[in-house]
Amino acid sequence: MNVLKYSLLLSAFMLMASCGGNKKAASDADMAAQQPVGPSFNADSAYAYCKAQCDFGPRTMNSEAHDKCGEWIMGKFRQYGLTVIPQNVTLTGFDGTPLKCTNIVASYRPELTTRILLCAHWDSRPWADNDPDSANWRKPVMGANDGASGVAVMLEIARLLASDTTKLNLGIDFVCFDAEDRGVPRWSTVPDNGDSWALGAQHWAANPHKPGYEARFGILLDMVGGQGSKFSQEGLSKQYAQGIVDKVWAAAEAVGFGSYFPSTDGVMVTDDHVPVNDVAKIPTIDIVPYYPDCQQSSFGPTWHTINDTMEYIDKNTLQAVGQTVIQVLYSEKP
Image (cartoon, rainbow, N blue to C red; front, side):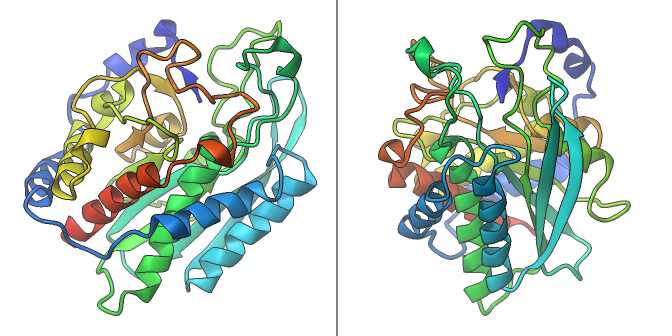
């Protein structure tokens, strides 16, 4: 992902103040604030899923590690009884490179028509172009936080849903977007207009895994395991789906993790939720960290550096985000 340039914001500001489903979201936000519901999120399990992805190595496009990790992710979702649809497509990078892309869609209770979208990207950045040492700018990023953490939280939620004998009476679609993090590097002479990011999400939004696919709302999980993370309210999420923001932040308060979700404004971010909102027309928010006082990056000190490794993954952060999402799902009425 990348901080959205102001020249790209005009279309976002023209969005209608409310998106489909926001009235319901507001009422559900009130309910979500009442009491904790749903199973307990296991941060140890999520941490293990995060590490397992990193054990393959950097999941850069067109690499063996990328392909093997993708098969592992699909295998885990299948293990938990979900219906898995790999969406394979060759996309073109900003530099003309053909990118072998696989969006992984895993559906819980696919027979139900009322559906919620959970998503994260699973690829990792091929260039550590924000590293303090310019000698590292062309080295790949492990992506423990930027990629693996969001998928890890989704896998743990899938495991919990599979083991819950009461069965959540909602359909959940977990979408692992590919080719998110191959946007123009800072050392390139190619202008970065934002279109080179979130390529897998752009494709899925225009070509969903099922024709006419609809979801009540979506939640994007991006970098949800970093030490010291605080999840302020990302700017475009507020523009697209304020009601969903309210719902999620109320859920965080209900489960005792309100300190991780301050009701303050974050920056506007180019991320997978943009095409999901603009093209697929699903009101979707981005849970993404904001470090306003970090000199290295407002996304935190490890963002797009060689230090985005398991050493800097915090189980407490995974717990806060995972339990909040569980609260949202189990507070939702069919």
